Image 1 (cartoon, rainbow, N blue to C red):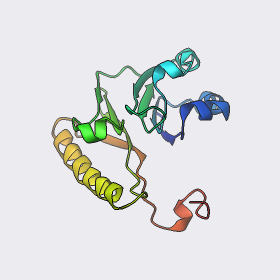
Image 2: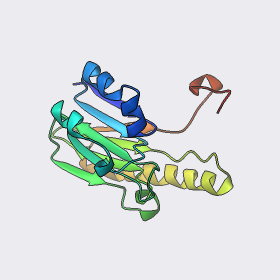
Image 3: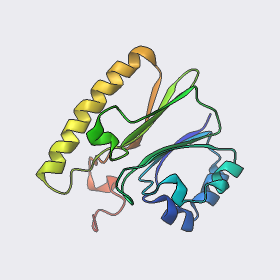
Length: 164
């Protein structure tokens, strides 16, 4: 089974840059996507469906912001949208698909780079997702957490550390 996590930084922009062709070449069974920055009705999804993917989108309420998704060739038993905490769910931060032997999560962690308030929000998210995962492990011991963690250990971990 091939699993991939990908921050597309806007699904519409990614499609213009060859994302569909890349996906066709890589052929993951499941892909967790971060930063969709679009609602499903804003994108021609037929290209993904034609590749055999079921699409599960969890966009942010604010248009053009955040949002996560899971595209899967394997039908999940259940899909859960969000963590049940409005402050994160309104930003489309986490989606989970439960399969027979595992649970797959696509998460977009807050960056905390825009000031103290958002940094505190990020720390709260880290605490809350830890609790969410601990509770979830009781029912689904095989958890896969894919996503953009927005944590860089060293400058080399940033795609372009000079412009960032």
